[in-house]
Structures are given as structure tokens and as C-alpha cells.
Amino acid sequence: MTLQPVLPCWLMAAVIASVGLFLAWRLVLAWRLVQASRDRGAGSRSVGSSSAGSQLREWLFRSALVLLLLAAALRPGIAGGNAHAATADVNVFFVVDTSSSIVAEDYGNHSPRLDGVRQDIMAIAGELAGARFSLLTFDSNAVVRMPLTTDTSALDTAVAVLQPQVTAFSKGSSVTSAAKLLAERLRSARDSHPERPRLVYYLGDGEQTSGAAPEAVKVDGGLVSGGAVLGYGTPEGGRMKANTGPRSGGETGTDYIQDRTSGSGRDALSVIDEGRLEWIAGQLGVPYVHRSAGDAVAPMMRAADPGKLERAPEGAGLDGRVELYWIFALGAFLLGLREAVLLLRHWRQLPAARLRPDAGRPLAEARK
Image (tube, rainbow, N blue to C red; front, side, top):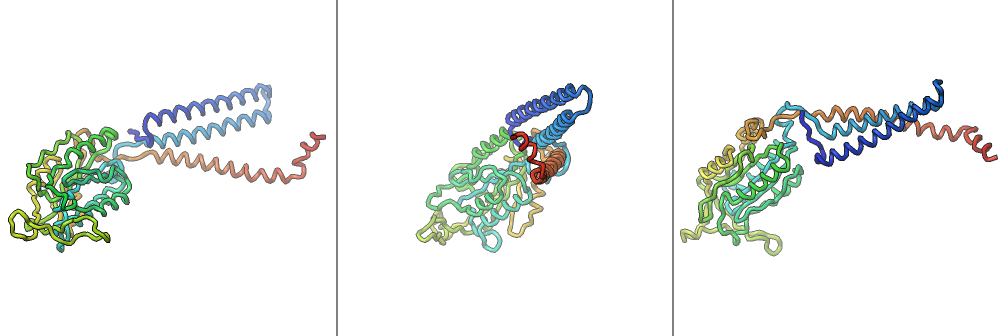
């Protein structure tokens, strides 16, 4: 059995200790009242003894209720289930190429590759519902667009507003320029939650526009539990619209990037480099999958099947986990329901006591 408390372990321990001491104190007081009532009754059954016994019984029920809630908060579980039951304990990192080539118009019916990137990210998020997602982008620089979060609406918004680098600022990019940032994020995720597998999805076209050769992707063994490198583009290539940044009136440019290397004055073409993408996949230890418009989600997920990650290093596979907290939560709910019924009954008896003709007579006589 394993525990995954809803609060940090040190805070959970402090809460359990303080609550345990308080309940023990209350139970000891109630027990002493019972003993004192029995001594006064000299062995006979008295009203005071019955009242003290009732108070002790109520505190036993309340203690059981609180202890069941604490047990549920510890989130006990046992190994079992399937990959979908474990996706809530997965960290997913999307690494997206936002250089100018990502808007090359050779995806589907002359659509930009970025359309496919957006669709696939949200499709993966849908397959791994409940996981934590982070978005990293790279062109001339690598940036964390969104830290790890379970908020898929935030992921949807971050992906929807993705744009390529402003063309005037582009000085060439490397396909592995996000490697160091990714390694840092992976190490941080492992250090904070070592039990959560880390999936990496790299989305790009493999085109190296930097003058230098790409650096190797250096990640420690076991940092990447699975994922895939997803490639976009065609060998024929596609034209790229220039990103001039926001103009007056909020409009963006519609001109195409020109090929200035040949002096022909023609529109530049971006061509996918699948060899480079396969090399990156080998560096990360994940499969490479080429993506085209209309491709189903299932083949992509089979190529990066989370259910097969039990062979990952450090035992960080996506083995299922059967949650047991609901058993304790159910017990707490039933005891809480009992408390609510007793409270309602007591509340309903109060007006009746006040309306009795003789309810105030002892008090009036005492005043006389």
C-alpha cells in the first residue's frame, strides 16, 4: 500500500498530531465524567451517569469521523488498475518549435504546420485527462510558456495564441535549443514529485537554421518516462508567411518570407528533416511519429503508449493505482450524516421546549 497525501507530508503529520492530541484530551475528559457520575450514583443508575455516558459515546463517534477524514486525506492506494487510472499522476511536457518554419503551408490543404501542432497537443491532453501539463517553446530562445498545471483551459489558451517568432528578430534557430531548459524542468519535476512519470512530446519539423550543428540533448537517465517526437511538414516543403508583429489596427503581415540565399527573389521553402527528428527521438528515448492532416489520434498514442512505460527506469512507469481513500470518505460521510440528523433533531426540539406553558415556571419561581 502507498500513500499520496493531499498536503505535504510535514504539514499532514502536524495536522494529524494536533488533531489526535485534541481528540484524546476530549475523550479522557468524557471518561472522567462517566467515572465521576458512577461514583456519585454509588452504583445506581442516575440521570447524570446516563448523560455522561451519552457524551462519551458522542465523542467516540466524532473521533471516528475525524480519523476517517484524515485517513482519506492520506490517499491510500494499492498497485493495480490501468494507465487511464494513473494519468492524474503524470507530468507532461510539450516542447514546441515556434521558429518561422512552423507556419510553412504544407499541412493538409496548404494550412500552416502550427495548425497540426495545436490539434495534436489538445488531442494528447484529452487522452491524458487529469495529468499536469507544461508548455515550452523555442526559436532563437527557449521559454516556459506555461508551468505544470492541470488546467486544460489554460493549456488551450496558451496553445491557441502561439505564433512564430517575429521574422525581423529571427537569426536562425537550433532544433535542440530547448534541451537545457527541458532538462531543468524535468529535474525540478522529479525532485518535487519523484513518483510521477514525466512524458515529453517534442513537436517540430527538424529544420536546423542555425549555422552551428545542433547540440546533443542531454537528460539524465530516468528523467524521461515516455512520450514522442512528432514531425510536421513534407519533403516538398511549404512557403512561410512572415510575422511582422502587430501592426497598427492589430493586423498581421501576409507577405511570404523570401529566399535570400540564392538571389532568385522567390519565396523561401521549409522542408521537413525527418532524419534530424529521429535523431532527437533517439536522444530522448522516445519514438518518432510523422503527423499529417487527418491522422487519427490512436496511432500517435500507440507509438507513445503510456501503458507500456512500466519498463521505464527508476520504476517510474504508468502502472495503474487503485485509490482506497473513497472507503474512508464514505465512512466519514455516513458518520457526518448521523451528526446532521442528531443536530436537526435537537434543533427541532428547541422550539417545542420554549412553547410549553410550564417551560418558564421554574425560572419565575426562582426569581420570587
